[in-house]
Length: 272
Length: 272
DNA sequence: TATAACTTATCGTATATCGATAAAACATCA
DNA sequence: TGATGTTTTATCGATATACGATAAGTTATA
Image (cartoon, rainbow over all chains, first blue to last red; front, top):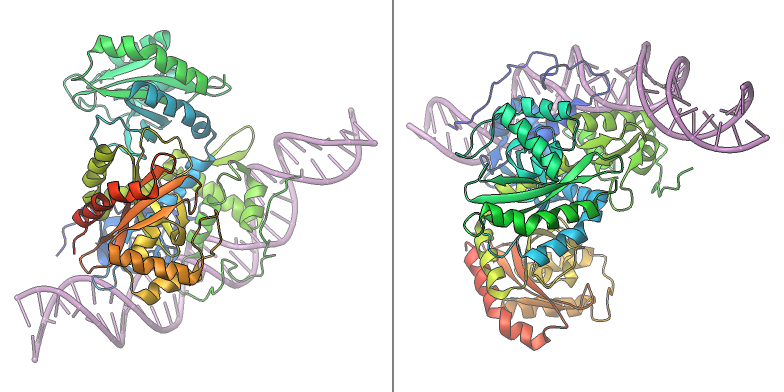
């Protein structure tokens, strides 16, 4: 008997049980379902058998059967023929790879990130903003770091990260605050800035000085300094940041050593 | 007028024009089409408008419309509202991220790769085998390297890479040679091993000595040494390799310095 | 050995997807 | 400026496609 957090088995009525409004004639629901199946796998559920797929995704057994079959045929799932359990394959990396190869932002940023990484010998990241979160798009690890938790594709809340605040600071203020308001804010560490007015102040300060900082706001002992990358219309399309351990730099040292470097790099990547 | 390599517009008859046999009652064709749309984007086509999507994927305009709409709604595509052009979003990194988080192989390998990377100060990779290709799953860059061409998700032909040969060497010989035969072999560089019998010899030698090497077989000035990671049944489920520049090491030095290290690491990650 | 849980295969039905078409928006050029 | 062609957006009826119930087959459990 498997104990799965089958969020809420919708006991499927006839209509598409996907999310809410099924009345979008251009929406191909099968695609959403396929992705639902794929994202059922993760740290919590590295492998799933058929009925687990059904219960985790809230689909009936037949649908689970059809979609696992389809995704296996397409090569995104692998089925162990003796345990009958499914798992994701390395082919799932293809999509992200396509993105990486096609992104003009990544293309422009890459050499600068590389240079920054060698120059500073610290961890350097490229992130983008999606909704209320930042996504790590590219990452150059410093030799000092042994944090294997943050990798390409990792998401973090924008409000408590330097890149997040850096990007928000270049959005129209109402939009930035709309994102803040949408965020599920909580105090991850004792030094997390999470209150609305404090965040507004931080955003304004960041806009004025051109870079954002975050000291132990999400992870303890993590310090970060970031600057926004702007597109040709002046809108933020990403951020560069340098992340170091608090044990090795004081707040002042981080700013003194990296602020102008990070601002210059972000500016060079921008195409305002 | 856009000149796109619309491979062959199948001039769609009624039946599912996906690939070949459409007579698989469990196959959900819409899923395949969705992925077809997503993989239309890449280095060649960083952005596409609606009709280009249609011609590149070989779908009619209505389907292109439906699938771009769907994928945009799901967040994998972004549509620039003034140019009406689509591009992939960073959300495409999610799937690969799920894979990364769920893979037991990655989980086991990570600390060893890290250690190897610090120990040697060279580029270290984890790869898996898919059909005739290896896929880069994890990668620790050395400071020396400025090759931004190989990234996570990159594929290379197995037959002319050290990790590829390392994995093939632990497959039953007929299976290994079946893969060799399926491969589209060509002489990428003057030193590419590409002939069937030469490859067979190489595979046998690799099996005997426990590690594989490749010197400028795919990229010029690239040297690589790899060992296979075995699962509990002794089947290869991946490979670790160290890649260096030929200008910095001779063939003998590579072997002398790294062979036992790479074999030991691969063995430690294995679970025979 | 009996029972339960799960996987695989089959099939009639209804609906979600298809693809043609038309309207609207946009671009190009005489 | 208006005419012409291209691309995008919206609509809709037909039916192939995906649905989901169920049965048969397989593996695990007691």
